[in-house]
Amino acid sequence: YQPKLDLGTGSISGVEALLRWNHPVHGAISPDQFVPLAEKTGMISEIGAWTLNKACRQMQQWRSDSVAIESVAVNVSAFQLTSPCFFDTVRDALDRYDLEPSDLMLEITESAAMRNPELTLVMLRKLASLGVAISLDDFGVGHSSLAHLKQLPVCELKIDRGFIRDIENDPEDIAIVLAIIALARATNLKVVAEGVETAGQQALLAEIGCEAIQGYLIGRPSPPDDIAAIASSYEAKRKNFEVSFTRDE
Ligand code: C2E
Ligand code: CA
Ligand code: CA
Image 1 (cartoon, rainbow, N blue to C red):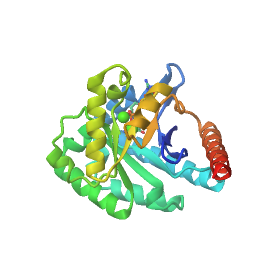
Image 2 (cartoon, helix red, strand yellow; image 1 turned 180 degrees about the vertical axis):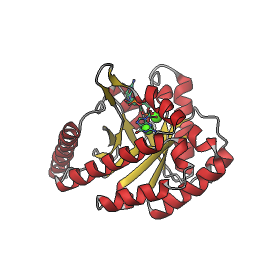
Image 3 (cartoon, rainbow, N blue to C red; image 1 turned 45 degrees about the vertical axis):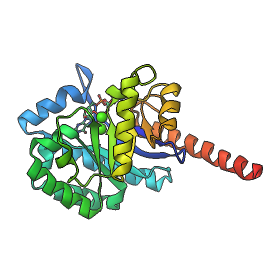
């Protein structure tokens, strides 16, 4: 899991589940390597359902441990979105672990959303009307049409890491990120920058109105206990700040 920091409140607003395959011989294998294979063989539906259930179970655990995390995000492949049983998979996982739909966010990449636009739109509308939040991942690098994107019931845009990497030195990257933030504001969407690695990037993003950030600076993808520790330390910082702010007043 990787934490996501809300720059407005200073709390860990959510976490994203990032899948790892711990292979007995080859060690940790990146999802970039095995997800495309799982998509090819059709195993992605099963793996996806397993991941979703694991993430929901973990969210229930954090809740019962009173860890201050608002929601858990799970990445969803294009193939899952076009499989009719995916809706039931999501609803069953929420029921099984006693979660509200708003405790869950599904991340779909801009290009996955364009793979089969009609079917995907139907599925996303059903999920959104259940109350599950939808985030558009890798925003800015897909070959998508704004006319189609505007129909999608998303509530968040995640700015692709590629625009963040050199943002401190590259005026074109700043211009693109500013444009995405403006687009998000105009359409009432939250905006998150991914791949934030330096305090300089964080300061710049805060200055230009980015609401939330995710990246190694806040925390690397880590096991659940580490996430709980990160969330608690941000909660403590936030409360300290509130106390000193009230005193100053
Ligand atoms: P993504 O959803 O765009 O996830 C962000 C990737 O960037 C993750 O790679 C994360 O570890 C990495 N990252 C996060 N912060 C930083 C940073 O500050 N610097 C750098 N250099 N990298 C950072 P990861 O975990 O290898 O995942 C790769 C992709 O695999 C994900 O990209 C996502 O599209 C896919 N994926 C991961 N888990 C799942 C899953 O459960 N299901 C499906 N269908 N796809 C998944
Ligand atoms: Ca993602
Ligand atoms: Ca991404």
